[in-house]
Image 1: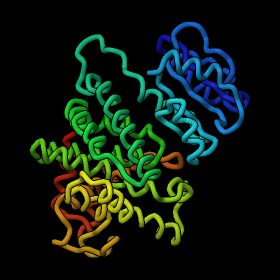
Image 2 (image 1 turned 45 degrees about the horizontal axis):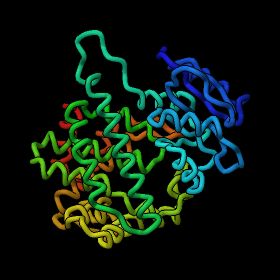
Image 3 (image 1 turned 45 degrees about the vertical axis):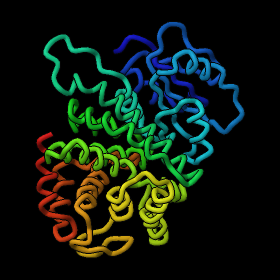
Image 4 (image 1 turned 90 degrees about the vertical axis):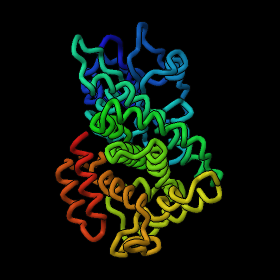
Length: 356
């Protein structure tokens, strides 16, 4: 166990015995109501299991956050609606999960935020890179949150904000490796945040393995980070639906590519290659993709690269209702899409993933 106390603020303690027991795998867990002051001594992390839309003083919770602003924290949400998420963000939430998220997933999310203990001797590459991975993922996650919030609100975004995440992601992948990045990013249960971070990490890995120049690596990661910005304009009941979408919902979801392209064009500051990725990352070589039904040579190379990363990320990402698909199975599906995806790029992507 780690030194310090985990604090679980909950308004339903009788129902959260499973969560308390799971959290005690990391450290002793104090279960408190929202008004109770935090325990004395060092606090290791915070889990807030509260209905943030109900009147509540939140005195103890706010005190703990104010005293330790860098404290790792997970918020378990009664609703993933915008009002609830906004209330959580006002409390400094970096990770919001649905209230029915399995206790073990919550524990995994906290472990991802906690820096691992220093090894006694011979640190391996992953152990040494893990703190950098967590820091870069948090930074990129915050950028994606601001990006989507701005697109949802004002309908425009700041290109310079995106650029601040590029070097941290590339550095984290270069030092910590893809596996550590995937393990960390899968703790983000918000599907859009997690997906964009996964695609960005895969794009960075692919670009490094292909020997791209520094400028081309940055361009690929930039495109990956913003490729789904149009989802900010998709209704949350569709975006956050736990099960498969029906045909009408799929039609609405497909609008995100055009909406994202329009957002970035209005914003300015994004080059033609990035704009092409945002609009065309669901186009397929046989012309069966959307929104424009492009085929063959009409699809740019950078779009083909991101599409491979995008499809793979969708297969291996973690959701509350399913575990991530094993890498070998996901790669088998990619290779089965010959004629739709660029086969040469899929082979190169397989080598880069295996080599990482």
